[in-house]
Image (cartoon, rainbow, N blue to C red; front, side, top):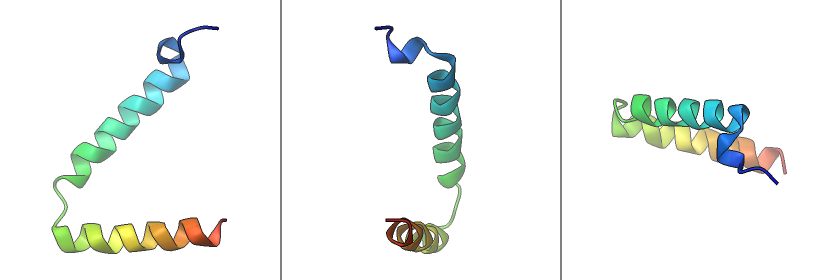
Length: 47
């Protein structure tokens, strides 16, 4: 089996994840808390 880190889809998704984290670092803490709550509710809803 190939190393998954060599797959193009993994490389692109990893890069996107890094970019998202970089952008989130510029958010005010309060907005991050709100975003975390929204994402948590969305996850629970989709169980």
